[in-house]
Length: 575
Image 1 (tube, rainbow, N blue to C red):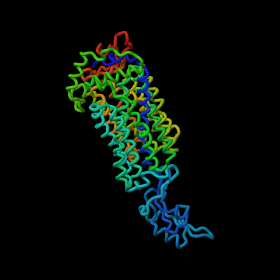
Image 2: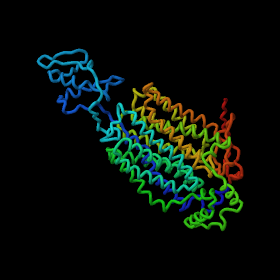
Image 3: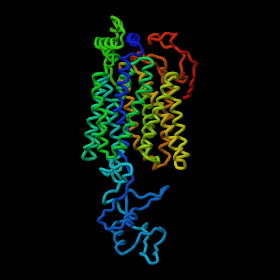
Image 4: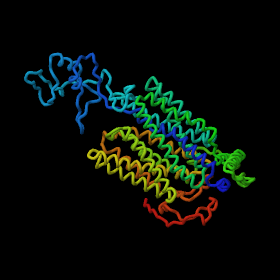
């Protein structure tokens, strides 16, 4: 079991079988990315003000003046109140005009007397709201009036969506480790298509929220399983290329497709219906994507694993050995099969518990940063579609940078460097937020670059730390805590009530926290992935080596001549 990669080395590092799996899995991530940040467009809050009904018989001048102007930084019309409509109608009926000069009442020679409205009684929006259609024809917010008194429902809907992802992570991880990667992958894709279409016909906010919850269940489960499946089938350089560059880049392409679709379909019902199309297109991939042979071996299903690998050998035009897995490994597999590996095994021993808890905190912090930056696009000036496009496309160079770092640099050093760059950029927003909008956007993009590159390294780092028997459960548990962070991120903007820079400072602080915790994790650079819990490395304490020159044990299948010895970089921490 521990020599799995040696056992399948006859396939070669890259052949037709590996290339087929590589391409199919990358393409299968498109529905996941397509639905990822749909909440930004479906739940967008356009500018709005109280509706003045036509039956009020007011002139356009009086209709414009009926909405109070609030001065908080920059003058803007009130979103949730208007001057008392009865009083305004009476003033209009007796011939008054609204005063342009807000200091005193005055009358224009030869014209109607003017009246200052600032002292008039205000009332709530009793006749609904008028919404701007500059960017959105209709959203869930405008359809069900989730503003003012019901404003709390908008972030709650986002919260429910991400809580669905949290539940999906918890459930799908255990199902995947028990029943296989492939059923969970295509089950998640089916959920995305079915419930996207169902949400487009929701008759109320409550119905939409329930359907949106189930949609969230499938979204993250899909990506996690694709990542794990590719990491287990591919070996060597192709695995790095898959997990660090190609898979996330195609995922971002799905996000960019959503941006184009949202720009084309500005009615939320049409957009939700269009979101069902990518998943349906990839259901036929069931017959082309194989199950993970590594998972089959970990479950003791050696005959199925050997059959799959022999078919792969035929596809690669290489000859498979008469016996792929030696009897000694078979005995180990059978003994491991008898063990019941569950979510609790992530906390059973001290070593795996320490690693798990630190990774949970890091994933939580990175998720708050990522989604907080994504949701903060609404506070940036300019076209929301362009801002979303820029914040999405910047992820591609971030993935390219993380891929290059994964090939040449240790995981600890790579993660910390990227995250620190993002955190420092976000702190500089304190000086540019209102005075330099273009520079602010550049800093946000740089912050997103650092956070995303660090998160990309974190995906690979986490997959390399945990063994095969519990890898998908571990990845899903980390994604579950990531979803806790993303669930809180819609409320991040509301912290601006206490301080307009507070959301940005919090994101920067959490980035620093993630970098600090990473110091204590063991290094996995140039080490084969463990297959059993006993093969896991131990956490580092006090004197922490970010780049270890100690060769991995022989069990990891690497000889001394295959290793690259690099100088130690000592990270000293005083507690």
